[in-house]
Length: 208
Image (cartoon, rainbow, N blue to C red; front, side, top):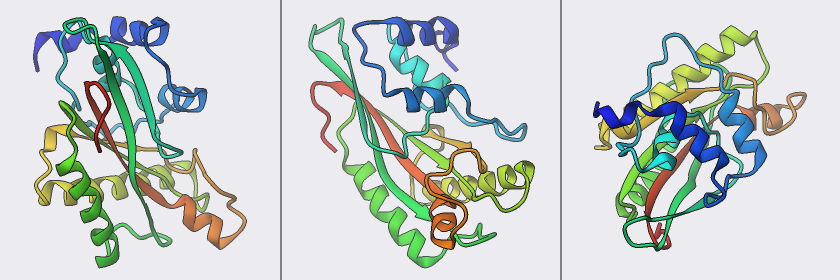
């Protein structure tokens, strides 16, 4: 790993305090700061960045759940003085049954469509964030393990289809971030999900 990627703390501070950089909504920031980390989870870095790219470094260092919507943040490119964008683009949400981990043919078809968008995106730096969730059946540890297994299943399929491993980052949320109620089956199924998000940066407006 290049030495410049070690400037994590200052990079995050720059991201959070810079008025030139539009921070995503507070729900994203809260998710970033409160993501549970499994001790077996050792994600690869998602972006190579130099010391004068604090925003990219910070995105590589914090945990962000962007499953709610697409986000674009703006920052000045020092070399061109043009706006540089870092875009969070939700490509797909994949629902899972009960204890399901293995991907179905329907799910892989959905992921294939996301891969096509990744391959045709024009960002100068790309990374893929895979965030996995569970419903509230079982305890915290069980659901964290289950969501982690789902994230790995999706990440492995992405790699199998040609996505380079070192641009993929996985995060397991367990049951901590439901998007719907857990007292109905339809709500629980919505909460058993894996989101695939494209993070990319480039000068000017992103084309996705």
